[in-house]
Image 1 (tube, one colour):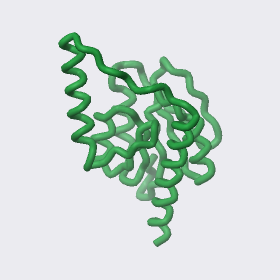
Image 2: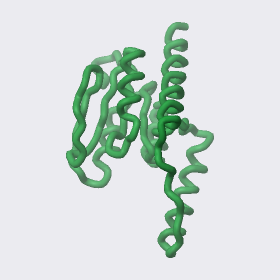
Image 3: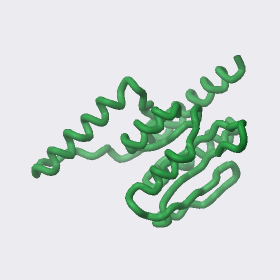
Image 4: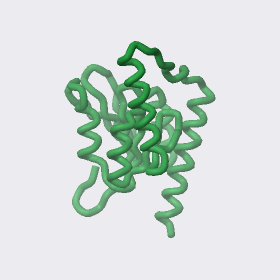
Length: 159
């Protein structure tokens, strides 16, 4: 994370339920970008070259709070949590879902509203569909999107 005035762009991962950890690590290594995987103590993650693991207590929002307090403008945040995505966007981070969908100012309000409507439906006894299971094609699409984001950011840095 930031040290002094210089900040190295970092990929920060909401690691508790992230199904593309291996793809993130591989892509980050190819682009020489450090990764921080943040998870609760309930999830066992192993550090590897270029990937730092930070474990926090298992209370409800500990992972999100750690991420929010440690990201900087220009970091890349990987999460499927719309609330965390909204805050990260506000801090100037690029935010991707674990399926490679970019969360932006243009779509986050709609996604938050959709989540709210689904929660209301479930509270009233209704049922909602969850996400489909990840497959290899989803993983490849995610990796392509992350690569595209990293290349785009590197091009801006070179200008």
